[in-house]
Image 1: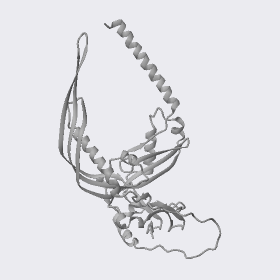
Image 2: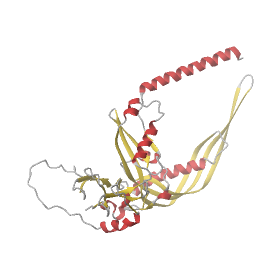
Image 3: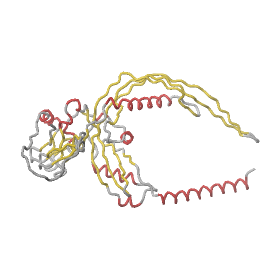
Image 4: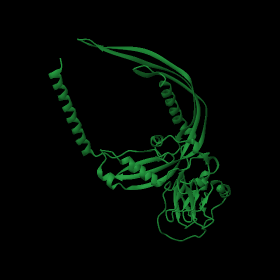
Length: 365
């Protein structure tokens, strides 16, 4: 049975949580700060705790029976602070009580082989994420005015996203088709000469900690868009870092993530080698042979701020790297403004074309 863990301030009894600004556990009530190492014994002792249950049996006909399979993946926990029920799925590892906002960590989700090796603590706050969204909206000429002026954030949460970090060595031999194009003219013709070449590159490249998102809830392309993370800030995992945030354990295994890691490593290898083929007009890969070896994986939690907004019944999701502040997200388009700008640009293009023809007729050959 999973155990809910919350961290209580020994000074005032309030629930303490990880503060990204001071990089310590801090009580929001009395401002007492605690070093992270001081809480390690909590994690060790409470992993073996058993949660008590109420044996009271009620005779009631209220409600109806769940159908088979309806409750699969749904878990109910009891908040230690107020007794309220907290509902989560099989991947929920840290959350907040919806009644008293008490931050809790579900210890059972990080036991055994599910325990992460590393965590990169949050550096940026919820206010930083709100400001990043505001900056993201600035200067967007095709953004609907009402979205910018009346935008309501439906949800903003700090999430520790599970990542698999892959190490591998790549041995590659890649052949490229390359061209050089030369153009000249005389009084009658314009000449173009295209020379074709074959270029080969071979060598080895080592990769460390190539990240692959281990949560099916998070779109892989969205998570890759807010990279990179600075692993220099990573620390050995402690559940205390999760207090005050939402955290998921992986539901995509390292074995299931290998293919995406391979694809990322191979693509990066091809791009690295292609960058050395210089002095040509065009360069295209003709044949690529890449072998990977010495592969291994580690499990880490990376900080992400997720912001959800709704416009005209359409959901828009934004993500911000909780360490570096890199912000991404799609925006709605004002089609009326789009067509107005297209008309302006088309008119400007027509005017420039007419000017060029006039200049040619008056001053040209």
